Amino acid sequence: MIGERIELWHKEEYHYPAAHGFIPIMVSYIHEDELMHPAMLVVPGGGYRLVSPSEAHLVAMEFYQAGYNVFVLEYTVNPLDEAPLKLQPLKDISRAMRIIRFRSEQLHILSDQIVVCGFSAGGHLCASLCVHGADIEDPDEKYQKFSNKPDAAVLSYPVITTGKYTHKDSFVALYGKNPTRKELEYMSIEKHVTKEMPPCFIWQTATDGTVPVQNSYLLAQKCLEEGVPFAHHVFSEGVHGMSVATEDWLERRGREPYTQEQLRMLAEAILAGETSFPKEMGEELLVQNGIGRTQPPKWTAEQKEEIRRTLKEVQIWPKLAEEWLEKIIDYKGGIYK
Image 1 (tube, rainbow, N blue to C red):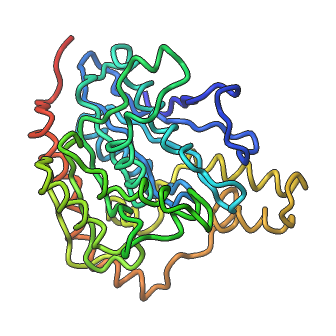
Image 2: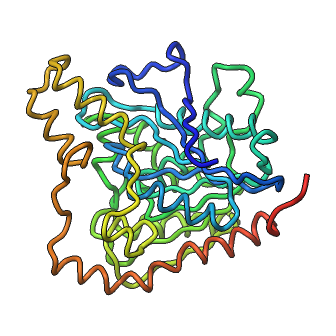
């Protein structure tokens, strides 16, 4: 079954002050057979400002077709600096992992073969779960008894460091414009890698102009030092945010709207006069993100052709990841119950 919408929290459990009625969700891509499958939790990026639809459905279908039961996470974001997120996204992904393990038998999932796959800030969120998951307790006892630790992580052009090569705006969304040194230290993934970190597949392009490629190198180096199994692929060319790097991605096809619920609800609240933002900002949000509106082109025709030249090299990354994961989690194509 493709398209089940799973709310992560009951209203009384969820306390982000600028949610405007939003509750974080997962959307599932489940094989309707009697095989037991590995699972993947896809975590799109967006600088903790949005949950990118270009890194959701296209990615889910790639790994669904490779035999995974897949979930796409819409976690809490902070589009307009209303309230620092702090640990809320980490709580969201932790609850998502525990729900998957809680429902693993029902959903034909191998509970010791659950992979997280994050992009950009979503990669930071996945890596945060890998290094800080033990810090996150679940308020619901039935979920707390299940582990939130991934069995492996696929990290695509991830935000890693709060140091010299940081993507500063991601951390502004998390902690505001004046974070403490302790907060920044906690969110700098490379400072917390130990041998207990799950195996990591890391990839990026050398010419990424948004998240410096040094982020990937910093994590790979720490994995090497700590004895964490890892693969690290750096492609010679490509923009930031290439997702599966196919023609569908380039032409902005397959952008399902389910990752944009929080943005839509914020825009509706602004338009209804329920916030301090001017009403025109609500319309601007809808247009910028193509929510019920025609979205402006992201690239010129010339830029698009330049990007098209890089697709063939980069689009092999899912196959590389699938081969690596097969070795790491010892998945052989499904196990009959």
